[in-house]
Length: 219
Image (cartoon, one colour):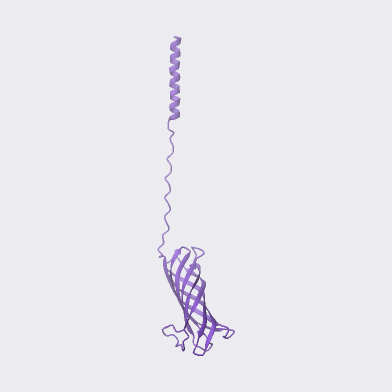
């Protein structure tokens, strides 16, 4: 009888041990993990990377040299400008500029048209604002470049020149495909020696052109 009781007790203990082990190894239900958020879509824009600007404005110029009037020879008149380029980054553009201005070598002389062809860089410090500044370098032709309805120039006074430009401006409604742009520039042309006629020449001539332009930029 005693042995039977011990046997029953042993079976009960084995059953309890098996139940505890089963409870410990049973999988613990876990909450379903939330789905991963979708990656953000890349910003899209209807603007092309390429742009063109055309504008007209008012300019003033001053010619100076050691042999000229100490106060320089100044003139003013209309100016034209065309820029074209592409957007390298949201804040940086590269382009080409063609600009027209006028200057005088002598006080009583007719204005002489100057044509600039330059490579330019435009930088926007703030990607979401219209402000930008620009700089560039290239060549200028001062003199007898054919311009319809331009002044008749006497003498072989055409000369090529190294030119620099810098300026700043603002694009209004820059998020539009067609936008209004206003800017001011300063072109510098190092003419060197300029021959006015067979007996007259001017050395170390430096021209400065200041322009305020308004026009349309198309992207």
